[in-house]
Image (cartoon, rainbow over all chains, first blue to last red; front, side, top):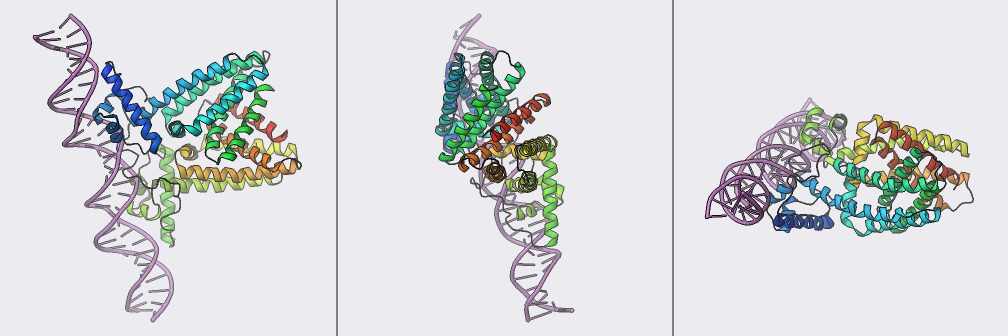
Length: 211
Length: 211
DNA sequence: TTTCAAACATGAGTAATACTCACATTTGCA
DNA sequence: TGCAAATGTGAGTATTACTCATGTTTGAAA
């Protein structure tokens, strides 16, 4: 989708140059805000670098001063979302000590995630591109693993005798299935989406609670 | 990723003009074969229309005679895969009449699908782009629904008393989870992938058999 | 066999867009 | 105050999807 394709690998993400001065840090914020607004409007694929620069009130050259390419902007936004949600997830699962607690916390997390995807076009767009963009895929996998670890910790508490590797596998799988389920749910009509999410919850909780 | 972006909707797929003569039908085959080879080598994103034309031994104009845009080529390949696999799935589930039969047939289907993704770079590539490309997403959803229907039929046979809508939801969800699980499995190392697929099978079968 | 319209084939040309780079300006600090 | 590093600029470059005017082939009707 661009004139010149660089970097087929997954090594994007880090700014070409980190803004060290106050002025440039503010400008980078404006760039990200502009990108976010444009993605919300038309999707990251249709987002044009020229538009981002214009909306942020900077030149196209400044954009490339801090972001090596278009994907890096999306990646930067994605990274923020993951950091934010990770805190939320960690908090929700940290204090779970029994089955009922897990049931409640898990159900609530799924709901939050579902609502977030329904409400946030930027988030939806970013994680839609996950499969195609290797850097995003890596970020998502890493994030998912980190979140699954919180879940694994809970499971180890609830089932001290179980095989740790099996618990890790279960937690990771259940977590990824949850992301897939929510993505599926938002791509069908609301009623069916609700049913699918509810069905996922049942399935996941049975797996988590009954080993 | 292209110079000019057309059609943001999901209405691609059908050739701009169906080849009616023998000669052009052969040429279209060559185009698809060339595209397939290039996708296997470098992925559909890096596939260039000029390369496809050259490899197929046709002019760039001829390519666009039968495919309205780049995505349409990928779509055409995807459509073939779905048609092929649908027959396989339908056959495997048609004669299932008891729990043990479902267990066997389902397990075998998951294995086949997993092996296919491990072995076929084209398939992997195509279904990776699923999330980003709306036309592909629609095709996959339609395909998944069709396959889930075979599964629903089995469930209705095994659990005549259950709520049909619930069975449909379960079948659709389980099927989609399977696709997600396999895609996850191939993006981690082989050992973990095997574990994840096995865990998915257990989870899915429990859901399918125990309601 | 001739004819001719529709199907097919061609590839130089167009448009769009990601990204560069040579040069100008600003900042923080010795 | 001087100056090097950081930052800012935008016209220009490269690449690529896609078009279109023009030529060629096909199959069937006359």
